[in-house]
Length: 44
Image (cartoon, rainbow, N blue to C red):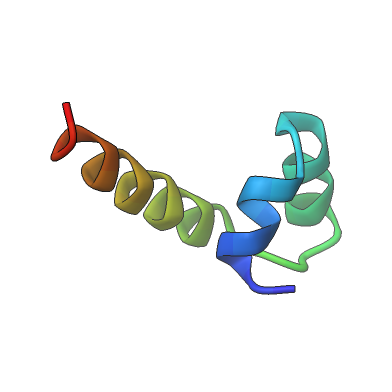
């Protein structure tokens, strides 16, 4: 599962678990969040 897919599949608790288990880094999740926000903002 890619980070982008995980971001869409997991809730905040699930994402925190991925960070706690070192499966993803916080910075990677922030990058995905920013990318998704930028994509949505262009549609508003």
